[in-house]
Image 1 (cartoon, rainbow, N blue to C red):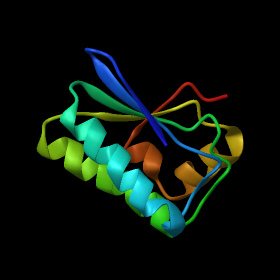
Image 2: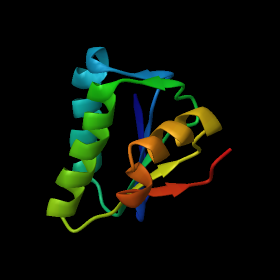
Image 3: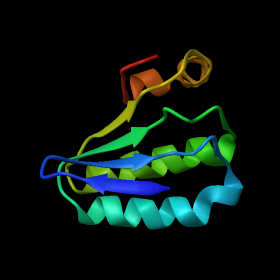
Amino acid sequence: MNVATTPDSCTIQLGEKLTFDHHVPFRAALKEALAAKGVIQLDCKSLNYLDSAGLGMLLLTKTEAEKQGRKVMLIHINSKVMALFQLVHFDKHFNLAESI
């Protein structure tokens, strides 16, 4: 997972999958994002599959960001992943942006 920072935001580029197998690199990317400033963006452009552990990692991101008074955005979401996010009501907990 790549992390890119600007003065106003930090973006974590997610891969094709976000599952339990990805929790170690995800936590490292989250740690880096939390050390930066501004909005944390999770770029879902490549994301095609996530399991319950992946959903949990996204919720962890939101929880940790809120402790710092920061917001989390999920961006570049494809229609398949957007349908899952809506099914589990992530649209009520996250800013879901730039659907493609």
